[in-house]
Figure 1 (cartoon, protein in one colour):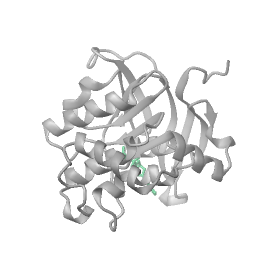
Figure 2 (spheres, protein in one colour; figure 1 turned 90 degrees about the horizontal axis):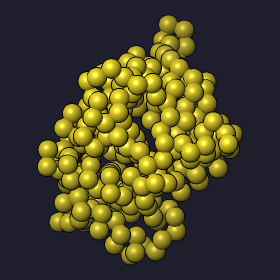
Figure 3 (cartoon, rainbow, N blue to C red; figure 1 turned 180 degrees about the horizontal axis):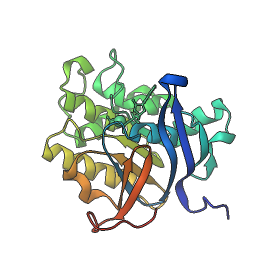
Figure 4 (cartoon, rainbow, N blue to C red; figure 1 turned 135 degrees about the vertical axis):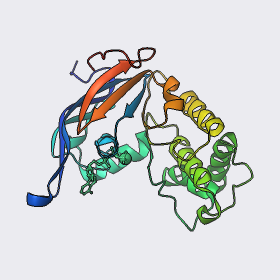
Length: 242
Ligand SMILES: Nc1ncnc2c1ncn2[C@@H]1O[C@H](COP(=O)(O)OP(=O)(O)OP(=O)(O)O)[C@@H](O)[C@H]1O
Ligand SMILES: [Mg+2]
């Protein structure tokens, strides 16, 4: 078995530099991280420590400068761009920190995008997306455009879009940042129900201490590195290695 066997995500020595010379930013400085199947891992840490950079690399939307990244048993560096796009489409759901909704599509159409890309018929895709939106409390906003939605409503459309095709790896960047406590809880419960399964895994970047109880483990990042990984129930105690 490879070192990554049994793991949904396996990162070793992952670095990421942005820019060169005077404008060089070392966003990641050697990240080692394993996420087993069936786990919901939360990633926490101060602004600018590298959380979005790390989850973008794991989700395959950003290339690392160096290091090994294995996702669902596949070495991302060994994939052609075309294969990586297909792999992402079929296996990864990503909730972007900035939502990235398409402005000309309604809430239900936005949430249906992964199904449409996968070849579903439009009516079936929109119906499936509408069901997820309904579970997130947006049943009365299905035909609104993003510009007609509040920030928290747009955030939930982005979450529905990431969940609708039941991806094996779900990566959420601050999924509850614009939500009140009740909607944050509803969202995390839905993420847990759909995405935390024996052959799936979830990584949630968050600053929201109200949702820490949904984590199996919490990884604390600091200045481009994982500082500590704490198991559920041990938050605040000395860390275990990853
Ligand atoms: N495209 C880019 N070009 C240059 N620098 C970048 C780029 N993207 C991120 N950075 C820098 O890399 C570092 C890590 O950024 P990142 O977005 O990963 O932080 P973060 O932990 O997600 O922060 P936040 O909590 O504010 O979202 C920061 O110093 C940031 O300015
Ligand atoms: Mg970020």
